[in-house]
Length: 398
Image (cartoon, rainbow, N blue to C red):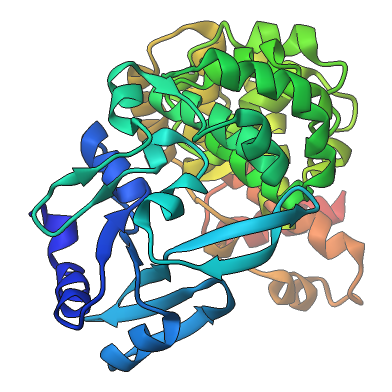
């Protein structure tokens, strides 16, 4: 048994000893077959939620109404879900009713894509009633059963499909793609937060360019926040090397820059991003524009800070097709030689200026501190109290 499955193997064995079926299912099995890093390991069982809770000393019933119990093994949480069917979806995302069943095959039937509908037993034997391995071998993403039904059950599955294309480099099965083209309008029923989560995974995938082209081919882009008229921009974006992207911020910066939108903040707000993330993206887009115009200056490097500067450089290198590694090393060296890295490293503060000037507080304090900061960063002034005090009185006398 492979390492990520060893610890939760205890859960399967315990369920088996008590007369229940239990299997590893979903993304962990898929990623094992794809030889990708394995994240959460999920388990499906014939045991009812109450029976699961009786068998394990440490459990959490966070999703018990849908059959899911979290079992803690050495502080690691594992989702254990009763075999179930779902019926009567509402809002194109939620089932009206959930029925617990005893059939693994019926449980796998409700899942989105065939590659996610594969189970594995304690011996590593695969149970694959919907030919997920065949789809993986053919690099195809296909729905379990009728794609029309799968997408009307949960419209977000369309975005998930394109996200998987971006992450894996696979292609959509033709019937799956056709159903996306017919049902894209259903995305209007899905919360922006859920769409944004999938979109971010798509633009950070190693095959994001392929995902962007699929947004175009399926017309799904028309139902994403403020992208209805962005067809030409998306086509242009797909020509760049998105596989060099390493963070969500870099992906948003590249995406936003190539869209050439009037109000970046308004655009990002439509995606309901957290304020902290929005501010970082806006800061980096501003830095990117400055670097593209005047190159890397000490002032821009200082304003961005090392982490954001490296992110901006990776995006700049994508836009200019330059060797990013060489430039990243140069930025690191240049940053190391900055006299200060933040305002907190100044040897003086506002109280010092007030004491020296014998004046009332006011906007002038911040103005002088900003000027002192700039001059120290550009090596026009030493970061020591005597030099700063001398400069301050010289300026005040003018």
